[in-house]
Amino acid sequence: MQAGTEAKPNKPGKNVNVGKAAGWIVAALVLVLIGINSFAQVQYGHVGLYKTFGKLNDNVLSPGIHLKLPFIQTVIQVNTQVTKTETDTSASSKDLQPVSTHVAVNYSVNKDTAFNLMNNIGGNFDSVIINPAIQEIVKEVTAKYPAEDLIAKRDAVSTEISEHLTKRLLKYDLTVKDINIVNFKFSEAFNQSIEAKQVAQQQALKAENDLKRVEIEAKQKIAQAQAEAQALKLKKLEVTQELVQLKQIEVQEKALEKWDGKLPSVTGGATPFIDIESITGKQN
Image 1 (cartoon, rainbow, N blue to C red):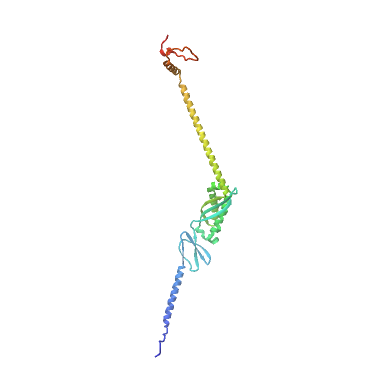
Image 2 (tube, helix red, strand yellow):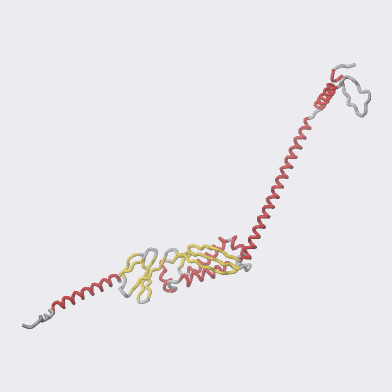
């Protein structure tokens, strides 16, 4: 007997089965990959555009699931919701005051013309189109107003900027929804001059109010004096001859009550005359 055991050769049929199984697995994986790459999803608030070998298709896709050629086509998404961009601008007012302006603009992409925007401008249209337009228009409008009017007429300035920007972006199929001037920033010297002017205005207003108060008080005094004079005039109209005689009698009665019946031996000056007969009703 020979030592050890001779190895048995593999059966050809078993190798074939293993190869077929591996082939099926690879085929299944390929089919899965193809299936996965045959669909694309467009999110809500967006529209989609087919891109085939770098070329955009003008067929605009609505939100949802869409078929595409696997490994050949991709679907790019364009946000059509209201989006905000903010820009800082340095300019000069009409009276040559330096002004720094922080502007916030809300805008949206027209979904029906998203192809034109993406094909002509690209996805970075905010930095290519919007921000430069904002800076140019803000400088143009700011130069029309004195620095103080930029503050006092903020709404009018904002409206004018919005009108110009809306017209400018419309040709790029971008819709301006709203514009807000977040802040006007002036030089320190100008801020100090504005503060001094406000203090002067407040002092002038106080002086004006004080003057009005004095005028009102004077008018009240005049009215009071006129009322007193009118009352005195009415009292004078009420004095009659009978009332005068009655007052004289009252004075004489009081003098008689104090008289001791003796006539003064020496008189000097004016001695009041007392009509005793009129008081006593007796005649000599």
